[in-house]
Length: 539
Image: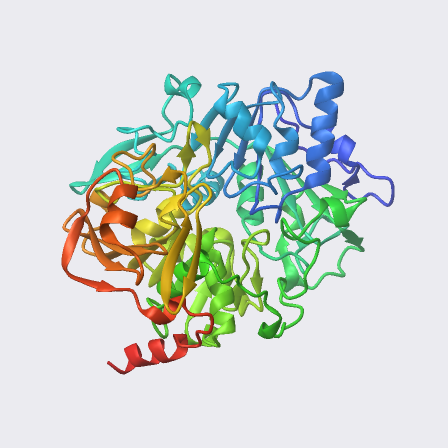
């Protein structure tokens, strides 16, 4: 059993402070541990490293289930990657694994059970567990790889014969997916400050994420909550409104010994005051964007922006659109948002994805997905890995390598307009542009428009539902029309028979109104975006 008594284990004054090593020793074999995370935001790195060290020395704790709701780690040596040790973690439930190579390798090599579910479903599940409700019932995931009639979110062969964690149910004559709840035994959360009673504030964090519902879920499952912080203050000195997790829900506090290394605000930085709302950064300081195929894609995608719209940007090429809107001076004309909970400002790209420069406000991760799932997004711009003739998109698994869906399924299911953004081919593609015309200097070695995608992360058949669905590349724009991939634009300088059709495994429909992409997209100087958005507003 998990020890649930709030023991005052401390070096001074009867507080809850313990070392990372003592925290690791509290975690027993076979339990489910859960941590809020977005990259490295929210992740208690010192505690995780102590868990890994203890396992290497004692082979305990073992057989853990790890639950994380978003992208995990920095693709190198931080995040859940550090506890990705065979035998230590033997089951994963979450939305994304790409940032944790050790976890991904264990999944790919069938050394770990692995269930991948939509990000919004996972972070909503914590609230359902806390309230002892029946789980999450939603249409999110129908028709994709998380649908149990397809793969049930099972990411490897080892998991194929394991129990389903979701099922299709009918309610009022409509199909839904029921994601089943499970206990959380240890909540590992993070904050900036803790007082001696365990109250947690988050002044320097770049997102609130889901620390509160994780703590509530663990406590109401009969488990414990351990919080990593940078500072401890006397009881009663934190402003009540600054407290994000009440001390009654926190059993133990670990003070980070090396916060600049193990308490990072994002994958890229220990602390940037513009991410936590402590300064307002001049947008002229945003990085320049290279004049290449990614910029051509961004510019064409940005032409879809509309004034006064609520916008979500995905990782990869789309996450640079926020920088483009900053350079073009139009960021104020719409509201950019991130899944992590920032509303307004300019979302940052990798390695700071999930953070936002100059956010107007923060809400919690699950609350953001309440808004998203209910149709709060007017427009979304997301990446695309593989695309087939039915408009299905795969971003979650390639060559057996698990990546995960993140919030992709939630967002593409409910956003009013969806634009997928990516290069036409991959693997060495090189382009340039001269006099408003695109030139292919070196074709990519791998096709992305395929007869069959490896995994369905976006279901063209299910999710289109009368909405505008675009697929924007550097040389062509497609639209899903009547369930068929239809070519609607072609870049100047590009030949249909030479540069497009031979680089696709299927032949798309060709629009009778096929038109050229605007030449100005392919010129060094642009500066047209504000006028394009204003012109649409006047119509």
